[in-house]
Image (tube, chains in turn orange, red):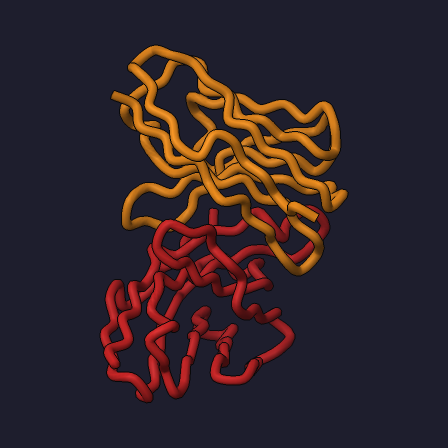
Length: 110
Length: 115
């Protein structure tokens, strides 16, 4: 099993550009999450999904969108990138009792 | 919503000493308290967790204690080793249904173990 796979690992965006962060898991977990981690800070929940076709907002959803068309994939969309979105983004999936994180995407918006 | 405070923000110990990190939470409905270790440039990894029906849990050199009345929980690492150096995060959430991943994280503690 590859676990939770995120792409890309690094990305630099210009203000106003758009991009999609990809996340896929091969553990057949129903629950998936997107967190962001600002420098020196803990993780904050952006969006989560309890299954294909079902998504909901977390603590910091503004500026982001998600979709969940399959159990495996949970992409995160940034429509109009802003410097405040410079962060490390972690996708995760959960099995009851444990959260599995991807390796992260480091995003800089300049 | 839930608010988690974590202290200290940095902790420096000598190899072999013990390290203690403390967290407080605000939502009495929270009943699941995991601890994550994050090495530089790596993903967070679960090291231990505790449910609110348990007061203490141990796994080799790591232990977690929970005081529901005071709404605080602590991570204890004994006989620290240089490889324990990392950032440690506490988190709180409600372990029901979909909620395992809907965690509120503390700010993190940078632990440095000096040889």
